[in-house]
Amino acid sequence: MRVSVIGTGYVGLVTGTCLAEKGIDVTCVDIDQGKVDCINRGETPIYERGLEDLLKKNIGVRLRATANLRTAVLQSDVTMITVGTPFRPEGVDLQFVEEVSRQIGAALKDKPDYHVVVVKSTVVPGTTDGVVKPLLEQASGKQAGEDFGVGMNPEFLTEGEAVSDFMFPDRIVIGGIDDRTLDLQSRLYQGFPDVETLRTNNNTAEMIKYASNALLATLISFSNELANLGAAIGDIDTADVSRGLQMSRYLSTVLPDGRRFLPPINAFLLAGCGFGGSCLPKDVAALIAHGRKHGQEMSLLDAVLLINRQQPARILGLLGKHFSDLSGKRISVLGLAFRPDTDDMRESPAIPIVRDLLASGAVVRGYDPVASGEARKVFGESLPLCDSLEEALRDCDAAVLVTRWSEFETVPELVARMNPQPLLVDGRRMLDKHKFARYEGIGL
Ligand code: NAD
Image (cartoon, rainbow, N blue to C red):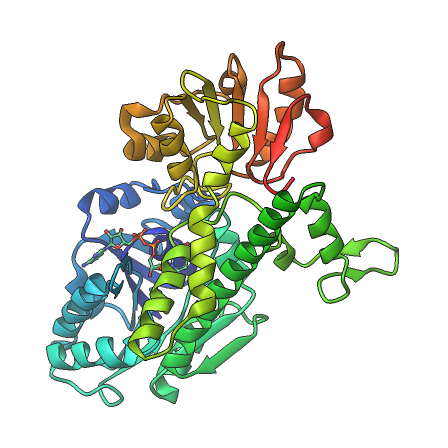
């Protein structure tokens, strides 16, 4: 089977590279010629653990990149749409999906064989059948269900773990307008024989993606709201509250050897300085806007976003307990990416935290193991960047931990060697408070 993947961002490049690794012939398409050239050289335009090795192994063998969408569609059996779907105040912005749908349709006009178009971008329920399908039909002059199929295959990968998430998925969800569309997608995923596949219609497939992200966002804001209440009441440690909650039989299991098994959902039941990234904030906002269009108020999810927007400001509140005025105080921000193991800074809580610190007159420095390049794009020269964690911790009045990088487990040891020791503000409750002379944390 030959596949064309339109859009080589996090989802498209990981999908294309991993499908090639599974033996499928893949052509990745992007309008950005720089990205195309980079991929064809065997280099990844993004940082994603394990991706470059797989790319180098497959490029020029079963994988190639091009800016020519038409040829890529004509020379493939399945086309996957993986372009961005950003959020605008009025709702999800489908301009990229619409544009590539028209272009794919125009190519299908000249393709005699049956073809399947699969939407992998995250789109609000109703988009694949109500927007993509009609555009394909108009541009091709052909009939969906007769001449081509239209499917929806949401992507659940987590940035930073994208390659392993794709190669070892927890589920495969495929939607389609008919059995033929679904069958071709099942064949596409035949390299994953042990993974449970859910076959459904396109609207439901789209909704499953939003339901998954909305649940995770809700759990995070729930944890943050309780942590904030604990801090307001006083003498409550939210880390212990989380542990006590997680000991419930609904959330964990005691194994026969007495150890407790905590399913990964528990990672979303920890308080922190808020969630970010290219997906959770925008997907929840898009679902709220979409609900409103359908006359359905989304009060719970509204509150989830409100709590999240306010959470980064908690960091300044914690610093304010130690410094009456932040002007001239040397503050290091540890972690700029929205989560560990990625360089993606989209909607990272580090952005409002750094901006608030700069606005309050603090002398701010940043450190991130991999996101320096992205940080330059976001902050320009306004945020000097350190080359190492040690450098970031040296000569600062306070260090603010924003991202849960495993490297930061060495912070207690590094701080212990310093005299005087800086205040540590733990935005993720990642470190042991007893190891610091001066420590503040969310919900402590
Ligand atoms: P991205 O912005 O990183 O990449 C999109 C790519 O599409 C860019 O390289 C862009 O140049 C390209 N593009 C835009 N218009 C094009 C056109 N006309 N022709 C060819 N290429 C074009 O986006 P992403 O993070 O990979 O996300 C893609 C979709 O997947 C979004 O809907 C997102 O919500 C969803 N998603 C993202 C993640 C994630 O973790 N990033 C996870 C699951 C789902």
